Amino acid sequence: MTGIVPQPAVPESIAADDIHLKKLKKSKTENTGGATETMSRIADEVAKIYSGLDGQLKKYSADCSACGKCCDFASFGHKLFVSSAEMVYLNCSVEIKPMLTARCPYQADDKCTIHPHRFAACRIFFCKADELLQNELGEQTLKKLKSLCAKFNLPYRYTDLAVAL
Image (spheres, rainbow, N blue to C red):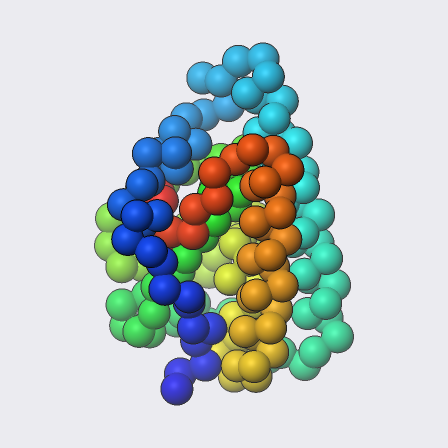
């Protein structure tokens, strides 16, 4: 094992139904009225989930050297999955970039350029961390993100980052 948080299997119907995620890529200026307000509220809720997750992680001695190796998904041997709520948050926080290679498009000079806005999986994963802890935190966070989607009537999707972008 490489210390990667195993991702639950994504049903083909969900993986193939990425129309909703594509719509989330529109910039906030293209949205009007209630759509922008709802997206902002979702983004605020995701930020709270991330803040709570960061607080939980401080309790553990997870050693991240910030080497950036895990951001090269192909060479590190994993994929990054993100939820629809996280894509709303990202869309409200930074410019959406397409993923043109197997490397995260938000990495530059082996560093994360969106570190304060990084996805839950990026926060949870540490090369040398306890896989059981990572799995537990991942499942807890996914439950919160699913609940958030239900609260705002946002279809829940859990999709490979390359597809979501």
